[in-house]
Amino acid sequence: MKPLVRKDVGYQLFKVQTGDEPTDWKPMPSVGSGVREIRVHAGSEVRVLYTAKFEEAVYVLHAFIKKTQKTPKHDVDLAAERFWRLLKWRKEKT
Image 1 (cartoon, helix red, strand yellow):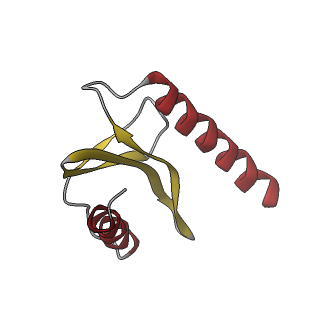
Image 2: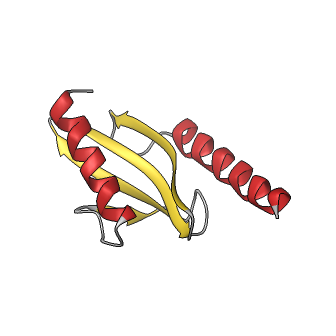
C-alpha cells in the first residue's frame, strides 16, 4: 500500500476514534452487527472493516485492496470470523 493511501486510512480510523464519521463508509451487516467498511479511493480501492460499537476501542477486523466490484466472500468470511472471536473474547474476559 502506498504511503499516502496508508496515511489516509490512518486518518479515517483517527476520525472514528475521535467520534467522527469516516469520509466514505457503509454498514456491513453481513459481517456482524455494528461492523462498518471504510472505503478509500486512491487509484486502488482500499477497504477497512471495523467495529466501534465497544467503548474501549475501535477494532479493525480486516483490511484489503479490493480488485472487483463485489467484496470477495473470503474477505467477508475472514472479517466475520474475527468479529465472532472478538465477541467471544470480550465475553470471556468479563
